[in-house]
Image (cartoon, rainbow, N blue to C red):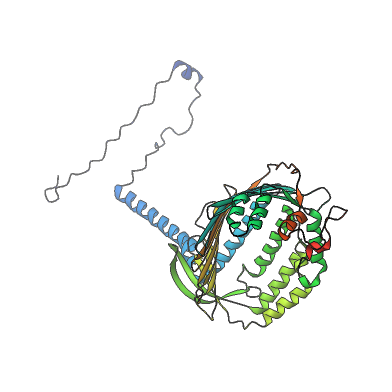
Amino acid sequence: MNPENPQPTETPPAVTATPPAPLSPASATNSQPVTGDLSATPPTTKPPVSKKKRLIIGLAALLVLLIGGGAAAYMGIVLPNQPERLWPKALQNTVKGYDGLVAYSQKNQNVKGATMEGSYKVTTSGVVADGTINLKAYDKDADLKFDVGASGQRINVEALLHTPDNATSPDIYVKATGLGGLGKLLGAGDAELGSTFSSLDGQWYVIDHTLLDQAQQTLTQDKSAGSPAGLNMSMADVQKIEQSVGQANRQYLFTDTSDKAVFTVTTNVGKEKLDDRSVYHYKVGYNKDHLKAYVTALQSSLKQTKLSPYFTDDQLKQTQSDIDKLDGKGTADVWVDMGTKLVRKVRFTDHSQTDTYTDISLNYNGGSSYPFVIAFHNGGETKNDTTANLTLDTKANTFTADLKSTSGNNSGTVHLVIKPSNEKVPFTKPANAKSLADLLSGFLGGGLGGVSPTSSGGFDNSLLNLN
């Protein structure tokens, strides 16, 4: 103990040599003669590292770890969140997201049917109507049930769709029950009308597929209609369309390359909060030449799909002419989520009326649920809002649609849940089903101007030209 420094003096530990273990008889017998310099100095043990030195080494290692982690965090988080890096990152992630949805649809390419369940409610002029919807579909058959309730009355409707062999359109069988009560309600002032509704109650009516084929052919031949024939598409056809759209989008929409990008950032507005999420707000303009190139590429891709009739060369010329008339000064507001690095919302505003706009949003926060939102807001004299919340859950394999519209005292809501299904829908042809001509004659007192079923089982052209 040092009186001037009353700290205990550390005494080095004594080193004691350990004698060699005695040889056993066996080892002594089998031992080899020892050679070499027996006077060589025995190996020594390294002195222990002091506590102070260990602390310095530990602090140095921790410092390296923090510096390395900080650099990684800066490169991985800070830099992408800077405006000039966040925008291209969001476009890249959007491409990946689109490709992921296409891959998801490919997983369901062998599904031939679907189920749908839902409900709706409409309020208008003080009258409330509501009901439920149930649909089962598989291949060429479908069974649809829905009901409508209003003013204390409820009508139940069932529709069966069956496409015969070698036909392109289905036969549609329809039956309504509950019309007796409606007939009494309406017949309070018109006994004949009430009796007509009552006679329809529970009766099956059929719309023959030949009538639908004929209507489709008429639309195809009528050039002024401007609408091609209806499309019968398989899941493979839908996937080809998705891939074609994705290819054009990847080249022109979801890129920031200067030679192709349709959208260009005009203003970095700054950081904001949106739906309790940290986002970055941009003002985005467009390049007219690149927009025309995008439309051309999209048309070229879609002409190789079942949508080809909708994308003719004449329509392309008209679209490009419309683009030429744009002043190129329009902008949209875009918010990018700083957490997911995805485009959160895009807003297109009517610059002549700034309180009128359209929002397209992807409110994705992680996981298997992808909520898309399309909202229309009109803030003019006639204020109205329409919102469609469309949610795809890739884990539950469901698609949910929630639609809502309000305008003054009028409102309406629809809720639908759709699931892919391979469950067959049995079809039994309803007995004693009456024709569409019979249904119309019930309302028109039998005077349909000579409309009657043809000998071939179809209907003549006068059905399509009722006056």
